[in-house]
Length: 478
Ligand SMILES: Cc1cc2nc3c(=O)[nH]c(=O)nc-3n(C[C@H](O)[C@H](O)[C@H](O)COP(=O)(O)OP(=O)(O)OC[C@H]3O[C@@H](n4cnc5c(N)ncnc54)[C@H](O)[C@@H]3O)c2cc1C
Image (tube, rainbow, N blue to C red; front, side, top):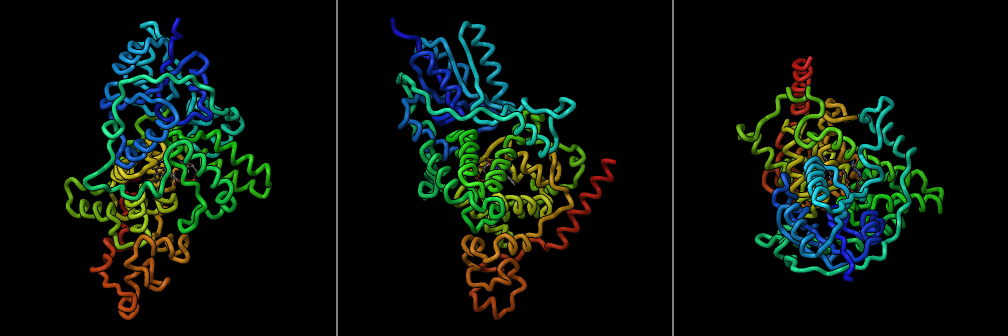
């Protein structure tokens, strides 16, 4: 008798290593691997994320036979269950509100129809509902959340299971399924920057543990240095498991105790990701509504009705604000699909506080342009910078883009790289070219307002306006 296959639905777990759901599927005979592009998804992936998805599917397709299908997920799964004769469907759980609701509906429907449907944790150290505060409520502050998660612990990562893959067609060709950008190809050259897929992720993780981890605790704020992992997209797509990463960092610290502090800080950054999912799970409106409703009263400028606000949003998106550290970050994002965390905080603060544009505009731009765009980390981080989120930076702490540039890009290498028109400016004026003497500007070949923009807002005036808006908010909400 022909063995009955199991359907394995890949989503954000694009790997074989430490994949508990796949390990479960493998114990039940042959496995058919499928990936679905569902047009009914309320918030489709942005462009950069789809670029990564294409590459990730291509990489996974070299490891396993993969069936690619377009269509509403339940309809496609029903079709595949019928075509393959499978009686079991297995996946790693999703936690974004729409994905989780869809999964519940699929689970309930197919179970009623006699199929076995099983989800496992695939891309988290703990599931968002595993942790609560002393009152049994969701945690609203990171440190106690992280302490509780660490005290609870997580299972050790498991090697890739032995899987009897069963090829199943027809499958949509990848170039049609998830086309790469062509006219224009805004991702030209990205394949030299990134190696999506499980092997690339593992390689990057091991390189980071060997060469980047030492110094991470102190140097992760320096965008000019290679001391962050750049693993965020691989983590988002589940090309490497967070348990595996935690294990690698802990093993590095075990082998060399002088790495302990660096490993602990790296683990706590993974903890911020867990906290973001905890927040999203418990507060599903996080991606679009202020977590603190008092911020609803803030007098944001509206690009839909205010041409000056629309102009400022465009300048920010294009890296033309006239503040070099901000512009460097926005250009890095556009040219690579990624931005260093310190610079993300500075550009986000600039949009929200200097330009007084709602964080949702920034969140949406990041959603479209980041290869690591993530429903939880993006929303939670934007709200953190805005001050409207849980355990957020206070609104009145307004990053000074000049001071941040001087402090975290002390030699100016990062800013000069992304703002080459300022490359020859003396370091003292690199973050504030408007303070340079006409002689310095002429020597550096910079005509402000021509080669590089004049600042779109005055820092001090913008800061005062942001604070005035904040005080009005507090008065309104009192
Ligand atoms: C405004 C703003 C928007 C952001 N949007 C996203 C997003 O859409 N997707 C995303 O993955 N991260 C986002 N972040 C968090 C953080 O900037 C990135 O995770 C980090 O820069 C990725 O680089 P890395 O992999 O080298 O990080 P590392 O420093 O090497 O950290 C390792 C991993 O920990 C996680 N991590 C690190 N910092 C954070 C954090 N503050 N919050 C949540 N997880 C974190 C990521 O998975 C990261 O890959 C955002 C931050 C800000 C300020």
